[in-house]
Amino acid sequence: RRLFWLIVGGMSVAAYAITIRTYGTTIRLVTLQEVYLQRGLAVEIGAGALARYLMSWQALVINPMLMAMGIARRRPLLFFAGIGGQVFFFAVAAQRILLATPFIVLGFNALVRRDGKAFGFKATIASAAAFTFPILVFAGGGVLQTISALLFDALLSRLYLNSGFLSVLYFKFFANHPHVGFAEVKPLNLFFHSPYSDSYPVALSYDVWGFANDPNTNLFADGFAQLGYSGLMIEALGLAFMFWLLDSIARQRKLSVWFVAMICAGQVSSVINASTSNIILGDGMALLIILLATLPMSESVAHERERKMHRAVPAARVA
Image (cartoon, rainbow, N blue to C red; front, top):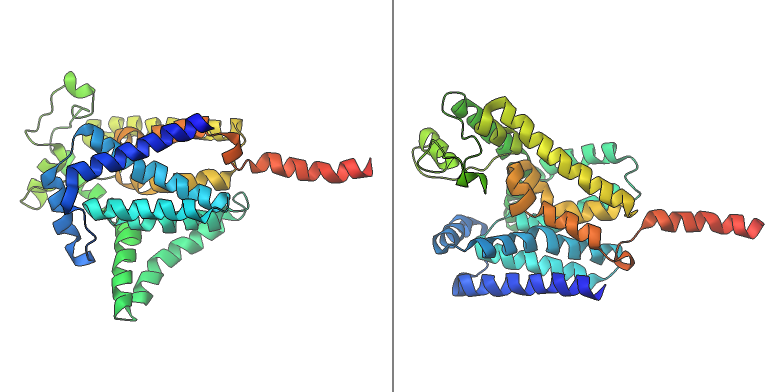
């Protein structure tokens, strides 16, 4: 247990230290109207590969894990430590989805608390609420409009609308332009060369909008950009393998579905808006699986074992 937390704590200290050293005085909380200015400033400063990985893993894996443990173990300090971390990284690069992560954790807490019973019905209601709530809040005016703008971008645009819209652009562009052939995926880029002088998302943005941008999209559109429908199948199978591995570890260790779902909250946006290679490495799904595989049982909230113990008590009394 001590070794696990020493490693996680060491990664966290390294992530925050490197972030502060890299971005320094540019770290500040901004209004929703200033997010793109702050984001552009972060891109201009740039960061090394190690810094990018540590920042992403902290925001998308470790902080959601802290929030999940805070709820599961009834430790409010852990929950708020995770929230504080998300606010910090929002102040770095103004990625609004980070502010939505606590709501996603709480959403999974409500949807899967009783081991996923009636999950389909609850998820349908939650999806409908995600569409209607920001609109109703916006109608209230004043500060409610600011809250609505955040909810609309984080819930509707990021999780629903952007992914579908950009997928259409990707399929249309790469149906008439050369496929990338995974030539920009590390380490394959050492052996293959991309047909584009810029990265392929930038090449698409020049064709669609006339200026440089980096429109990331989901694994299906990215797979089509790589090798057409064959690439789509490759990326889908790669992510399916990761889900199988995640499920196998959770089952073998008898981890609660509720607990695992909350820990995975940071991966929701990645699965919807990133390629399989980014989901696994850059956004930390591989790290998340490793942490679940090594998580001390005293921290794991293994409800399956608890239920069996509770069921065994009456039988023992009868005997």
